[in-house]
Length: 216
View 1 (cartoon, rainbow, N blue to C red):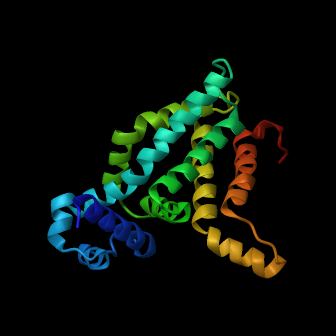
View 2: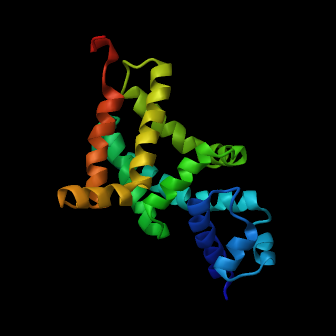
């Protein structure tokens, strides 16, 4: 078995088990048994469970960030240096998500479950890893998004970022269940691409609404 194949089998098993059971609840022995490798292989390639968790996220986030960067550059170049508006930024973001998923061979639903767990379970090492490795991409995107929403104060902008994250994580991590309910109750089907197409304007509206115009 080639080294790269061993690594991929470990990462595949870890991603599936972490998403299904959680980080603390999944042992390295369970991962190695599922991957068909021995514990020494995990220690050799990753060194620790924390490093393995980071590698699971890095395998998806690296192509995602690269595609997002390319999307942003291409859009700005096509518009003579004009920064994207909110809808365009979200299109760049979700297009990158779907393309990265295809490259890695990982369902967006599973990665969104992992992302949700990263917030719900104590994984401070993972936050530090993501900031160190991918913080520059995050800063660029959020900087462009903030510039596109000049009416928002920093606190409102901060919370709306997490509203966006929450809506995305819940919708996509629960997509299969939501789709099944739709099929059962309305005899209608929606593909993942169609769901993302509906999600983008919903999030855009949530980000852009001016609270000063609402009544109490």
